[in-house]
Image (cartoon, rainbow, N blue to C red):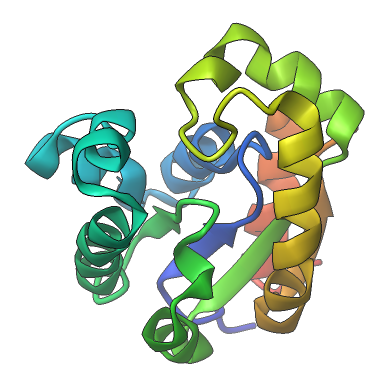
Length: 171
């Protein structure tokens, strides 16, 4: 059977495993991996510093440019959690294979731990803020997703295999 279209894009809330699984999926499919948050950091500096010095709107503009470039590639792409809020990004995703990584608050609290302090949108609000943001974005995530993968259970290897099998139309 034919493979699904590229790029293969991972979306979902912060802490859902987009970068970790994206790297594994890309390696298994022998495709490049692009993390749009990493691209923003490489070009403009740490995200929390962009938020602090320039504000969220400036960050979103930088993010949009990175996303637009990434979505033109034949690659596995990990988008930042809020990238899907941009209407142009939503339109660009129509031609991609989009996987939503689902995670619950209990699991993400363990994953983020102290790293959550470096997440500008959490701004000290912890898991309660994460829960609110995830709930606000859920309708957009759901509307864009071709496949939903629950990352609360299973190993990274198992989840990557599931995504690869789906992309190859073996699932």
